[in-house]
Amino acid sequence: MVREGGCLCGAVRFKCEGEPVNVRVCHCRNCQRAMGSPFFARALFEQSAITIEGETARYSSSDLLDRVFCRRCGTRLFAWRKAGTMAGVALAAFDDRNAFVPTAHTWVSEKMDWVRLDDGLPQYPKIAP
Image (cartoon, rainbow, N blue to C red; front, side, top):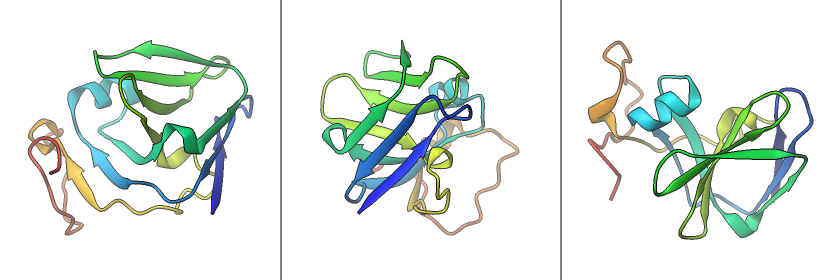
């Protein structure tokens, strides 16, 4: 299966082939700052399964991740692992924004106080096992 998506202005388009390794919502402080949102809802794919067209830019947000975004409109699209083969793809950037449903919340120890998690999904204080 191939799922497609892109940025707000349309300058960047991507395709993800196959199924994601997992689909999670991260509440860590780095994701909050990087996304400008209370959390980062993402599908984790092998980097080799992702094809990107258009000009992107990267910001090294930690020793582990580059945040990848559209150069033109700034839409945040990926959390690209520097060492390894995985990348988190923003769920809202897919053309079918309901294509994937999260299965867990991670880093809830850093979630914003007013965020209520009543969806019944597992919650992990830090990373999921």
